Image (cartoon, rainbow, N blue to C red; front, side):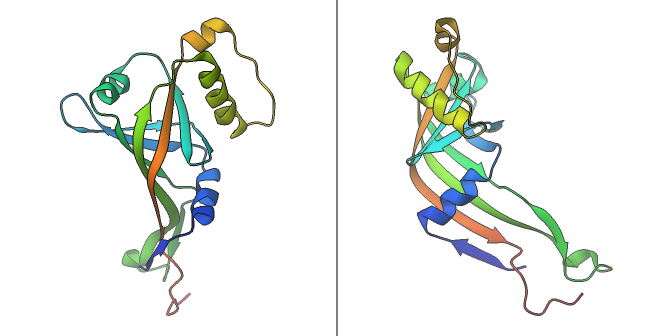
Length: 160
């Protein structure tokens, strides 16, 4: 299998935009790895997410705000030879982003973040009630580092 390091912020951001969900990893309150799938929005080097105002992830992030966010769209099973099990692999591109979660509390900041998040999934404009804004926990992660890989890149010796 061939693995290629990807670079170029525009190329990595293109991979992020193709994703419907991301996987956010953190350290839980007992020191174990904890990963959750989340919907998200991305703009200008910041990933925005939202959740309930309380829960395991909020407790963990209040103790340690460091996260790693994984994005992986369009994974596809491929093989070099259909009859050879060891030749099967997943072809995919992925991006890993690291940063610290901040929880904006200002209503205007929350609305801005929610609009960016919703723009990822819909071109519609949305309005938010005051109770909805008060009862949502918005996550903002300014990306400190971003790396990408392409797995299962075409092999020039491929036999079909």
